[in-house]
Image (tube, rainbow, N blue to C red):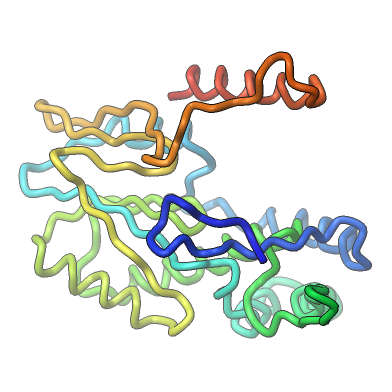
Length: 254
């Protein structure tokens, strides 16, 4: 059960269960709004691709710098719920924390006539889950960077995707990856380094320029086929307009 991630090795499934209409859906939306006010205020926070491009446009590289990206393996299903609730309890009253606890520990779904309960992580399909994941990762990155023996000169993060500029050499880079992967058993990172001066991040190609600045252009995954809904298809016009709006907006932003 899930959406196949065909651009990744072994084609893992992304489990998604829609929470629309569930007993906790409206409560989860409300709690997401409450928690959203407490995230996104760090210097590492990336709102979207346009924000990322704006932040890297003024950066100047050194010759020894390496462009690197990190990706958390299956973040939503690995968010440590108990640890996250403990962090929430530091900023909200106990009764509000109890509501978060209720939403995060009552994820049930039915599959093949059997009922299942999610024991850890957050449910993809709940409006609260992306905010919870972002909230926990802000705490994680603070812990990781404060305790790292060598730190990246730049660290930008969009939920589970992180872009860094590394100035301490290849060997220390592997040590930094091991450091990240030893902070919490649930949170494990994969790493990708620039190839021929290019590194994909979000939907952008980050490009090392001859003047040691960073350029960019649109990045499409190798599995992208340029196939879209036909104008004469029977899909709702709103869906067709949405595709055009997305493509035009991306062209303007990137």
